[in-house]
Length: 300
Image (cartoon, rainbow, N blue to C red):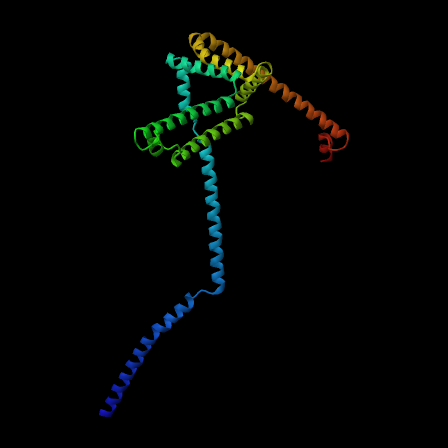
């Protein structure tokens, strides 16, 4: 009996040891299996690389489209750079400050008259030679006087040379360049709208204005034309303000007359273009280049 019990006890212990070994050996097998399944193959790596490349290309296209859309939006939203200047010009031409307006008009007319008889090129270099020569005499005389009184000769403009040099700050230059670029872009966009007939009436007004300037330019010089325009710009607003009702009525009648003739011209142009189309079509039918509508229906 004791031998039998001993054998049973040994069998139970052996079974327990075998189970424990199986449980201890199983996780490494599962981990190895998971590791083997998680390890990517070469084909999987190629597919991942291709998908990543395609995604990057799509992102680049989206970014480029966004940049183009943003650029178009910025172009459309360019503000008028002459807005502040318009207010100042309005103050001048309406003589809100008579002294200032009179001084500007007198100086402008004097400049036109002066340039009619003297060259700006010669005037500039003559003034430069005279002023720099006089300043040279002043500096050398001042230094000689200091030497006579036993002082160290010093340039009288030394404080200006040290503290106030003549140069343009980079930040100011960038600001001025931005203003110039904005002004040029605004002018170019307005010219594009006029030339490509964004507004037909606006384009027609500019054509009429250019034609008048072209005609006047064949009769009188540019300087004379500019002088007349300067005088009219300082006199017309005041005259219009005093006779506003009469002038508005005349302008309305002229605008109505111009619009009616413009619409009539468009109608005539459409009629003539339609007639030309019919003639061209009949000529093509007679030559056998195209089939007539009736012939095409019969064939059907």
